[in-house]
Length: 429
Image (cartoon, rainbow, N blue to C red; front, side):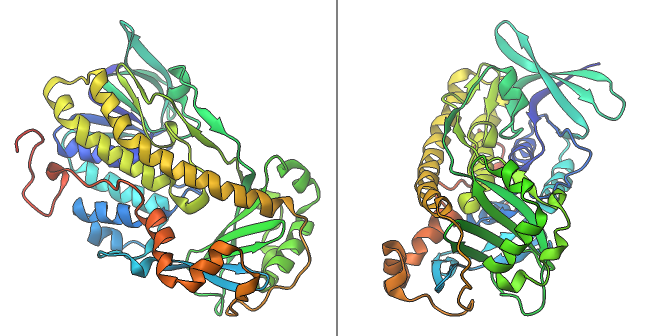
């Protein structure tokens, strides 16, 4: 079956849903294709940073987002064997939102879908797995997808196709685009453990020679990210889950009473960490944004927020052209990359620097050292120089807070997409 839309967005993640909403509010006919039946996936990035919270306010969604189940993080501390040191302080930022919000990604996406579905030009197709690009006269003219409900095949013709389908992008591969990759020193094991009364009331970053773990407070459980050296997943699993449970009990002693909740390595999911970026994010009729254009490391949790910023910038730049002519010339697509490539490069450079530090940590052999109590401050003379400076001058804690919470070139919703004021169509002011 052949169908037509003005803009086909492949992928119903944060980038795809934000872009779909912004374009629909400009009156552009937009179809988002999501290959799953719902948004329920474990261990997707759930950190919503200050820049995205500001965008939600501008889109008129702040109150509805605030009503979602969530935890808020104002400060970040690193727990060493010697004790703790505070590294980032969001309360030093300016503005209404001086915290990170930890919200299940499926709740955020469901909210965006509900709001976007109220726009007459928006369509969300679920269970629609994109398999091929359609080409016409050397340009991308749409996509071919399979309905996973009944196995039928469909064509969707579009003036512009936007790939928001992640770091394993099917669209990117179909277009023959290959990203440049940077070596990464680690992969991540994701798992969850129950949260008990009396546990720390903040997110926890734990570091010791040979080991690093981040624990995110999700209310009734901890979402845990345990770093392993790149390429060691298989041999580590061969050692057995009991060996890993013992290691956790030594590394974070207050988890010893619940480490047994990891019954097998089926409860531990591997994230293959990548750091990649395309040289060119577009070709005639096609634009790639978010992880499809630049896969981010999980360090700092900034990937979602960069993808959302890409989407909002793309919506602002493309909307009037799409609405008026139904197609976008290549120079206009290039403007999106020119706008978003340098903040992406800055954040990836920062991640590469942190990867260097993590490489040194993970290269060491783990030692069975009982850590100091969580509330005990690590002795200053035992800290690396950057942490000593951070402790000596607490005002500097705003720097990592700004880099992760806001970052370079935060984007703002275009006037016509806002709902706090009378809507204004693009090109009319």
